[in-house]
Image 1 (cartoon, rainbow, N blue to C red):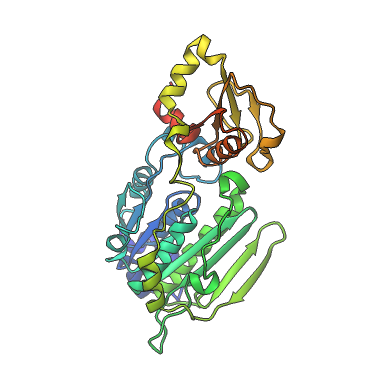
Image 2: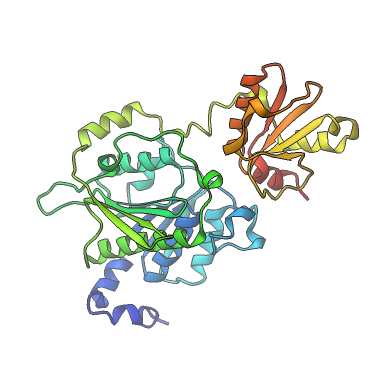
Length: 366
């Protein structure tokens, strides 16, 4: 098998041809996030002939991922996403060199990650990480293919592309100058698998256009697509937040997700500690376990389910002889619930399951 055989249908396109295919082979792309967006993006880019792919994701496969992260299987649950995805790609894309980093992208390592690639692709679901990637890409003059999701809406844009006049196209801060707060993640808001696939493919399309210099990339505009109504809107963007300003912002910001830090260690219970408590009959009787997300796949008995959107401490009758344990998928929404109960009842013993059910299953479930 040679490249011409593998990519015959693509090379047949006059707009691509052997020259365009060679451009793809010589391209290097960084995919940040190997979840719903990133896993599909990586597989399609490799299948299109991108020569070098570097994948970045610190997470492991969870059962709740499988409805939209279709390149993982039940056997992959609990395993590192980036490593599993690399193996899958290597089995079907012999002309793509795949490497991975099994760590989160941070302010400390972002420049090292983007330094030697042609294009950065944002497949994350963390708002601080999206701004980190944007700001670092602007500082290092790297094109950034952006994608994000909210329920049935998807957002796509290609940021920071070098223009003919030597300037750079708009970036994320031209669309949304400040990082929003209290934006629900997909765990809380939910997401439909079809919109995930639609937006991921749009991002792939942007990369292929950039590399082959074919068509018109989504520069200086933001595409918003609604999957329920099959409608789309393009918002025009004007470059206004320039590199000097972003460099100043970069120096001041930490880009740390507020949901993932600052949790009171005195309000935590580890997976191992909870398992031990559940195994002791006298101790388990004094536990009240409350799930704050619907339909959690939990390997132990849950006493109540109160969705985080409906969690009102004022309406919860409590027993001060009990210990309340809040649970969710990853320990983020459950910590919000813990805070609300502690604010209403400071003397009530309320604990958050650290890392949520995902961590519990990985560490202690048989």
